[in-house]
Image (cartoon, rainbow, N blue to C red; front, side, top):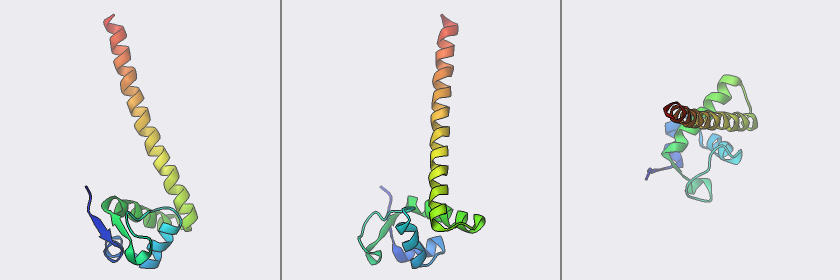
Length: 102
């Protein structure tokens, strides 16, 4: 199980302010693992990568948070399609190998 990080430490690790994390959460880019209010929020370590990626996209492409959320969603979909494509290629290779053996 991954450890949880309180909001203040999360901000330090991501090099962003608390209001930025609040915006990221409000746009659905991140979801705290625990807590209803920002002062109670805890994030898992996987959220660090996503937050850093969001901040980098926002700055590098000069996006607002809504566009950043969309870009992350599309990147996630692309990564999932690549994984699915790899799985299907492996299945196809096994199937083709079985046909050759017949």
